[in-house]
Length: 260
Image 1 (cartoon, rainbow, N blue to C red):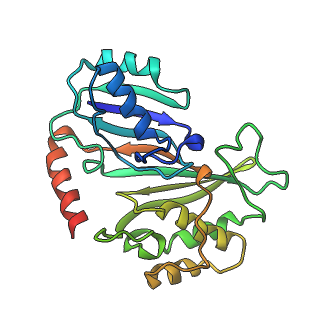
Image 2: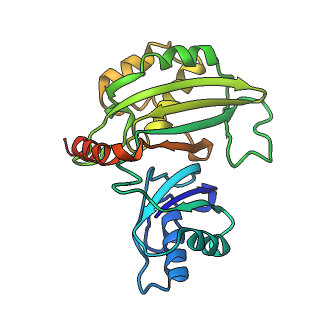
């Protein structure tokens, strides 16, 4: 089954199940076990394992269970907590894998440099910036990061995991009091989006020139001048998949690349 869902990440310790902690995966797996009357929760796989405090509007997961999708959808909606929304449940096509079949993820990071801080009604999803941001400089810096690179300097290292990614879009726009940065890539390594934002903000605050981004990228190691931005400003907005007849090839390609 394919499950499309959204959630407010404020009260979650991230996506992935952790003993004794409230997580999105844990809540949904528990709900699945309840509605399907299973002795053990089934294993749920998602497109993007969001960190603690990160939100999602377009998360996608899959789970191997025997149920009618419409019935499962209605039952899940009745019992999941209010900070999780089951958008839809559908029969997954053959070879579908929520993680490895994805060809693109899109995140948006929202912040404000208004001297009064964020709108109180949006404060759980908008990060407050202490200094004014120059959006044009941020976009100049972003040009140095687009394309396929080793983003090791923007990733939390995990043994055996590649940090080569193809960054498709990194664009910042100001709309009213909110500054929003759209980030698209084939995939992201751990903390990559928030580290990219830390680099752009350092330039936007005029602490460094736009070329600073190229310097950090070339270093291929974490740099203390680049801060990881607060989690609550980040939302997973969309996950894109290829046509059904291309799923198997995409899964094989993604698995092979992760193993390189």
